[in-house]
Image (cartoon, rainbow, N blue to C red; front, side, top):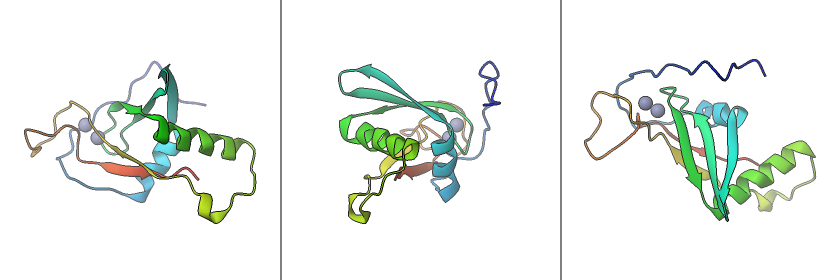
Length: 118
Ligand SMILES: [Zn+2]
Ligand SMILES: [Zn+2]
């Protein structure tokens, strides 16, 4: 890892736009952390791939199982039946930063993606 933790990435005040891109998920998969909160609650920590905000996204049991399953699969490759794919986890940016054009009842920059960690 060459990413210095003490240097937060600056927030990009990009205009609000509800958009997604395959590379969003790729970036988050490559650079995320999963923290156990309590019980079945986990928190996914990552940077928004669009605006760079630090995000903390609560995950509940079905979601984190998909993530943990994916981690195990990555650590020790095992033959997985094509029909047993992990369900995609829907994620959207919910930063509190400034994004022009954002509706008053929304948060984030509009970026959304799904983590399909298969
Ligand atoms: Zn933002
Ligand atoms: Zn964002």
